[in-house]
Amino acid sequence: MDSIIITSKNVSYELRNTYPLLIEHYKKTGNKEKQLFYIEHLLSVDSILNKNYSFLSKEINKKYDTPLLLNEKESLIEDLHSKNYTLFGVLGISSLLIAGLFFLQIKNRKKIKLYRFKADLLTENANVKEDISEKKDSVSLVKKNEKSKLLSLSDNKIKELRMKLEEFERSQRFLDKTINLDSLSKDLNTNRAYLSKLVNELKGQNFSQYLNELKIQHIVNELKINKSLQKFTIAAIADEAGYNNVESFTNAFKKITGTLPSYFIKALKEKES
Image (cartoon, rainbow, N blue to C red; front, side):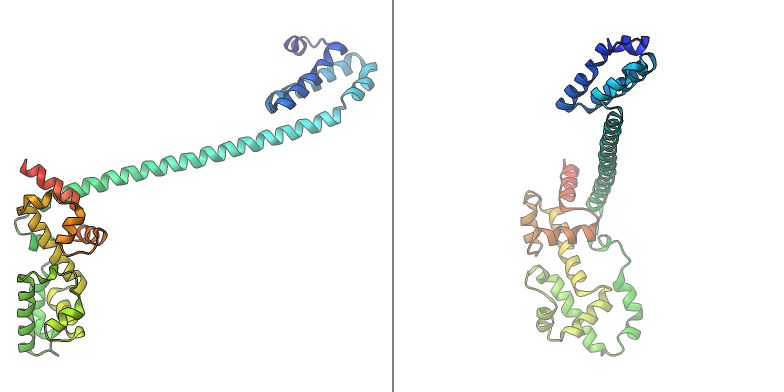
């Protein structure tokens, strides 16, 4: 009936009274779209009746006041617009989240690809001690400028400490978890500041970097030659390398080699098979 009325523009007052019932019904059920739909149709019907039956206009306004109807219509439109804005906002945030996740996935794939590439390179390097740190041989550079840099240190003292550091490396005392700058300076019969300066100038790095590189170089070589070590957990391998926890070991391994222990072990196993 509604579609016939709107199309034909032919309505009676009795049929007009069904629209408020429809509006109230959809108001109770919470269907604001339908409520707005029939309010607009009621306003159209009232307009037709007002035009065709002007004597009924007062009665119409009594039964369902047109200004109130218009206010309700505006209120519904604002409410629906607000819901649309909320929906668009949610969709916008969701789109940004999806885009962010997609970007992170691409970034993660690139990172994994780089880890695998670095791990493969590490398995092929013949001399890990020279290739592992991705920088020039700082020791050889220091030797050229040693006199200008260590003028405050006697030649005999420099030679003596260098020999002690070489012995420290050969004996693999760097695997001791308690080793630090203070303890080693006491073992080498020197002071903390002196040893720190010497390591920095002879090795081209601070003591912490020097110690980490020795540990990682050692464990890389061990993993290459010791297949049983490859079966250890990362925590057990970290312990073998002289680290107190997995996080410190993994961070040092990644910084020095450019890959992760797990990727390196996997590359070694793939190469062997």
